[in-house]
Length: 274
Image (cartoon, rainbow, N blue to C red; front, side, top):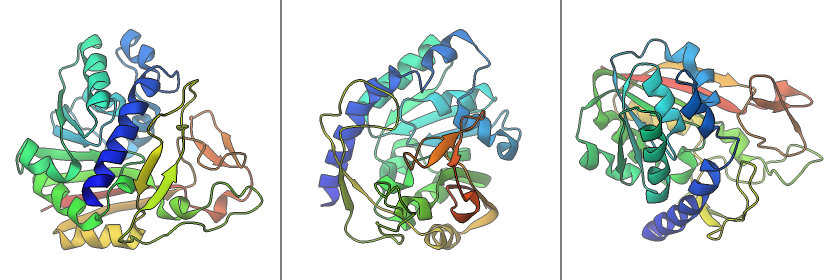
């Protein structure tokens, strides 16, 4: 099962890569024409990221590199890691066309230390929609800790595990339809669409995914000898996670139309290696 989930998920992300690169939602033309342009995801993160000029950073599960490039534009020396060769091909083209030196490395997340080297980075960054592809949150935390130098930090903004547990097909009520806690077996989805506007269907539509409870994530980091420095929950998410129940604001963040106070949609977590 473990090798099969990688094969299935990699094929799915290989299919998504050219669709995402061609979608206006990712705004690749904006990066090429405006040297100061940042992804909406990273722009949301800036107040909590602070000054990252001069830091050695790695973006884990970097996909087509828009957030990686944005972090480089904020002054960090960036490396991007992803298991999808098609995604990295798009990321390299974007960085080259934007005249930004970024080292993109193809490797599975759990192989990041052997692929990149231990204790190399001041900043480990992980963006939205990454942890759900990983079956073991403790192995992820150990990987993050091993990549960081003493004094380095993890920065992650991620979909809230409560959101991941909501059945998005129910539009009459917010209903728990999927596991909240990490399970041994994956939740299997088959979906030919993706989270951006595109006219094409995904050929390799089946994926394996896992949720991880917020407490499980925090505990995994603590057990990996990282010190938690920030945990903030947000009422917004950068895509229409619950179709028909959300509205997009001027900040390109989606929020519930009604009762926003009832559901956390994302969180920002920071932790430091002493």
